[in-house]
Image (cartoon, rainbow, N blue to C red):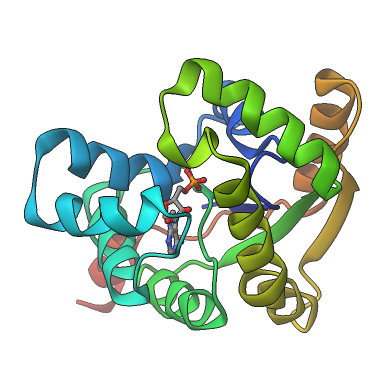
Length: 207
Ligand code: AMP
């Protein structure tokens, strides 16, 4: 499996680049924002609780998003790998992701951060808000709150992966295809040396 964490503040281009990466590497895209919005659309209790926080630009509790990622990993055991988008957003989430992946006999290959300054992020998100319908994209104070939370809580996650020598940062401003090419170069450098055996195969050998 090849598991990539795509990192960066809201509006950095993670969603756009994820779509291109899915086509190139056939990985399963796991965006906790998308998973939460699906819960809101379905009108679940979890979705209703999360909506209040999301609309204000605040983080949803760790255990909620960790639980969703755990479920998604369980449902996609045959995947070639995952692109994590918008997760992990706290150090506790990063530690849980390591643990969950270890249970599936795999690990994070690398984290790639897209760096974009606040002025550009606000511009991009207000523009996206005209069509996304997302309340958190339509109000400048909420956008700035999301960026502040990224800078205070989420940015620490970069250090977590840097300590594992897995962190890389790229300039997220510029030509989309040019940024994509740089991401691909990094991913190719982090290809697992040899294919990790699927969990089922390991069990078979032990039996
Ligand atoms: P996103 O689509 O990644 O911009 O996420 C939208 C909103 O969903 C965020 O502002 C948070 O309220 C919530 N959210 C998404 N992912 C996470 C996460 N990993 N941890 C906590 N909250 C999250």
